[in-house]
Amino acid sequence: DIESGDKNGNGSDRVSESEKSLQLPEVDNMSVKSDGSEKLYHLEDKVKRLESLLSKCKENIKANKNKLSALTEVKEQLAVDLESKERNCLVRKQLLKRQLMSWSSLKNREEGEELQMAEAKLAMHREMIMKDEEIGELRVSLNKEKEEKDKTRKGC
Image (cartoon, rainbow, N blue to C red):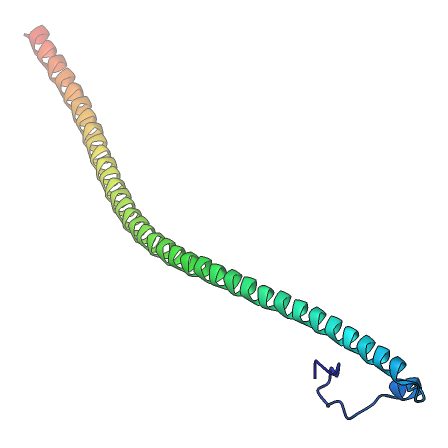
């Protein structure tokens, strides 16, 4: 009960020990009225404080609701941004994967071409060696024939 000053809501029937000890003996009518008006003043003051507290609480609740709605909007916007960035990241990841596959394919093709060129060079080198040997043999053979021809000319 706010009006009675009971914070626990147990009603004004209960009187605390401190209030019992403060009860004064009956005095004249005038002092009772001043006690009553003093109590009324204290109760009115208490009501004003409680009303002020209530209005502050209402203001806090309203401010917190506004903050909550603002934070909710920010959260939703961040969720949208995150989803967009995740999609963008996925697209980039797929593009990178395709580029890596393309690069790998080009590298393999290049390695294959290098291998073919190396094999062709090796074959040409072997052929050149064979031709050099053949030329050497032909020179030897030619020299023998020249010598034989020269011998036959000298002998005749």
